[in-house]
Length: 97
Image (cartoon, rainbow, N blue to C red):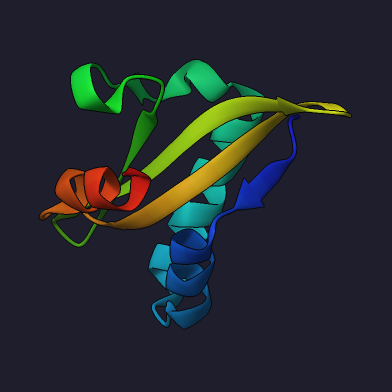
């Protein structure tokens, strides 16, 4: 399994997350991403190189945005942001620019 690094927006989101069931679903999703980083959906256009992974909880669609990069130890997964789908990808675009 590949290691994961969290950027500030993702780290803050997970730290503030109180819903234990949702937190568990995110943990399962991150394990799946670590096993196979291409399990998510590859984005295109302005978001080329970024992957999205859907997490569903209580009828709400949540997202994890990440990309793959290589450091001196090999490949690593970088989680950019996580949160509800509403305005999620616009927030990613703003953050990445």
